[in-house]
Length: 381
Image (cartoon, rainbow, N blue to C red):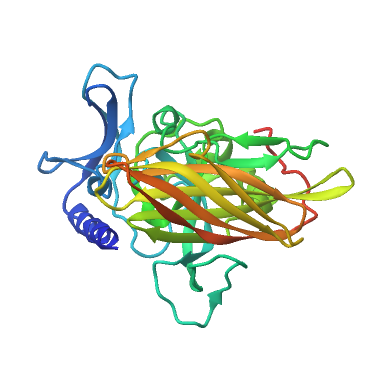
């Protein structure tokens, strides 16, 4: 919580400073010995001072740049803008991700209910917990803004060890109930993770959907406005893209955020199979280096079944969370033979001295809000 307060204070300071100084956003590949790393930086045109971009400064956020052995390189990205403390960013807003450091552009906003178990709420207006989720508590949901964004494909290789860049998946349009396809370079970004900037480039983001979805219009602010194709794609695919609930809980300075998505229903062997995807971010809010070693899931189905899943790491990895690389984000999938259920569990975390502790995964609902979904439209983009 202290880190969050410091982040807010730092953003507020930068916003005030930005009124007097124009900043150029730079990307920097810095030789880190065995591997090169990346961090966004600000260059003040007025005073010539260079500093790490906030809140990347707070977490000393870096991006892997193993293909840049020549040492430090600075590349102009754009001019820093004041962070919005209130309101929302519009379609076409350029930004740097404050945690993962990639360049992106806002497609459209989502309004989600954030259930934060680090905040003690009154008993009213709380979300019920699933059966058997011991040690949890009821929490009050709060409306929070997230954004559907495009990631610059030039940055995807440098964040692949920290965040999956194919986090948005769909059920395929054929009889195989387990087949999925992915749209690369799409992400969901929380309002506080956006560091806004502007650029004079007419195509500042490299992504195959950029020119299909957006067009440059210098008379507008921001100067990238949605094409009809983006509006049609959003409308047709709204049910599979919609972000409604976000769940968050912190255990011993390790914060876990979960976002579930309903994907639809398929028939298999004369039964109905319901599919969900879920995106999970782990963040080390402390100073101690730790490593994720195991996962332990409990999956409850409305049909009355309770499944236990244990395994090493997540998605084949055992990520290290440190001050230099504090976050890891991934997506996975789950299916039930019932229209609803719940998931909860723990991550086994190892300290540098070999000791372990368990981090709680906040319980979250699996709800089939629309059982009659047709396959997504327009994915041939």
